[in-house]
Length: 176
Length: 88
Image 1 (tube, rainbow over the protein chains, first blue to last red):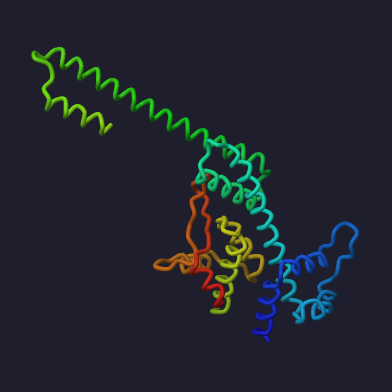
Image 2 (cartoon, chains in turn blue, green):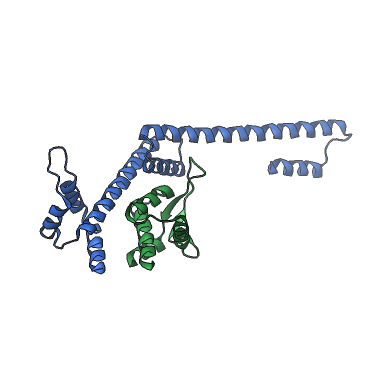
């Protein structure tokens, strides 16, 4: 009996998307539709899909279908955000993927709307760009300081900088 | 007990499969599984199944870092996970 239930459960979950939609609408009709009970759906099932299922299998199936639809809606929202972000030429594909994942996660956690996530994702990416710029400026400042020190050392030294010393300085600059 | 363990693992993997390649927060995964399982999973049970499914060398699911929240744990299914799900 348990095996039979497992089989009908698997069969239900593997139905074509159109049939999944039909079954969903029987249970959760749009505005004026008549909502069918699980018992009524169990009776109609053999005619619709060619096999029968127990009430507990059907109950589990509708729980699964509700969750699957929520996942699909979240994935669609993430895809919408991905399209939105792809319009920004400053974002690379990895950034866009990360942002789309963040949207999906937030949707699954039931936290809000897509515009807010896109704005948040952009803000975060912009923040990262500011960090990179700041690091770049720090590096340039260090290089400038080092160049000043070298210049002063060369001015204080009789005969200037030798070829070996110059090569060493260039090596150090490259390492910065 | 074996049947319950197998059922929990199956539900975890089928949830990840529904996510169309996105990673699913662990709290969402557990709430989905607990929606079906009676009694709901205990912490030990959950930890053991997560470990089983994510253990190397061929993990059935892998952790994906969350861009906006370092503390958030989220998972995505692997090819090994798809294969295991098909066999359950």
